[in-house]
Image (tube, rainbow, N blue to C red):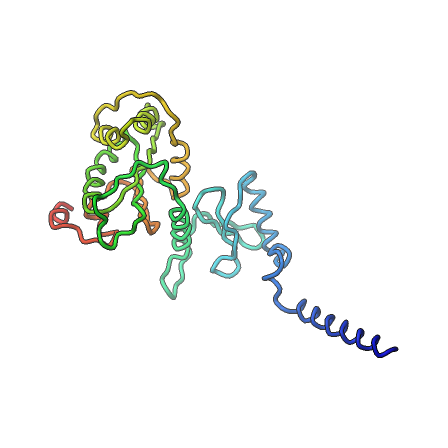
Length: 270
């Protein structure tokens, strides 16, 4: 063998040894997870069969060894499945006993914050305070309101107090037609009004909303957004950190949840 041939042989040998070492190491970071983890593939196939037509999202190993976690479609509910795909935990709360953390809730709040971080307010009726209160996030509190919902009407004065205290609030029209017949038509009239805030204030004061020329209203988009953020009966409140409240809360209670000190008058009426 010539000197050049021996040199080439050594180079090939070094490369081959490197490849053999790489193959024996943890290469999961470089390969598709279903190729290096057949259990994940088996479990995912079982989920696909159990939920035909559904889109599997956020698939990943769960914090608890031996389980995979995922969400379906745009729903924020968390599911857990074992590696064989035989056993499913639906909407289960997984806790870390050492830290006392609700890991499922932490994951949900994280997903909500992702949505809030990129959320456009083009479909909202925004109440902007004259001056932003100190320490209050610039991201507004979201409120999903049905114009015919009695609890939304009870909440609305509290929302106005919250805005007066320096907290921005974005109201998304969320008519629940199956309970309040005509609520969708009323919501469209509010959205298509020349002054949306004035029209919403009328509706949530229990007064008639004038008929206006119909326009394209984002009702379906608002309903979908509410589902993405956990849904819930109206009024449905979403705080900037992802926490949610279903039903009425006083302005003082909401200020406390935002880390603000409620006024003496608000504390006395809680």
